Amino acid sequence: MGPPGAGKGTQGELLAEHLGVPRLSTGDMLRDARANQTDLGRRAERYMDAGELVPDQVILGMVAEALDGPEPLEGFILDGFPRTIPQAEGLGELLEKRGTPLDAVVFLTVPEDELVRRLTGRSAQEHRTDDDPETVRRRIQVYRAETEPVIRSCLESGVRVVRADGVGSIDEIQRDLRGQLGL
Ligand code: ADP
Image (cartoon, rainbow, N blue to C red; front, side):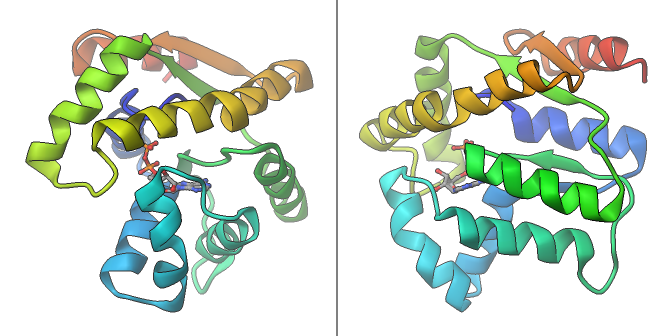
């Protein structure tokens, strides 16, 4: 978990490779769905471009399909999900049903001015449609309002929460995470 631009995708991918498990990124799944112009992709478009969240039921259906579709997954890293309290509750039910509780929640912190710098700087390279300054500010606002409460509820629920400083080199941050997770 962490704000947009914190490096969840980069660090999540390195952890997933290290563990030999897939990384499930709801943002990547949605971008794929858009690129393929599926019904889901078309429904998600306007939310993504406005920096708003795609409705919880859409996201929960997509994640359930990824976890328990034709090839049910054992281990996995979730990236960009859950992002709201209802998503966290839905995930809790899914995991309970399959008997696979979360091992840990990883939380990356980065100051806001650095986030804006990273996100508005990356649009030139990656051409994401939601990296213009106004949409970036909206994504950060939505994160504060909808996603920070999920982190608080994780802390209260007693699940293991590992918190790392997201400012530094990619390798340093990965080393810190693996150290804290005992991997
Ligand atoms: P970032 O975290 O950098 O904003 P993501 O790639 O995770 O980027 O998400 C991009 C967009 O996709 C979000 O702004 C939102 O519109 C949508 N999205 C991704 N994951 C979720 C989710 N779990 N719930 C709702 N919307 C989501």
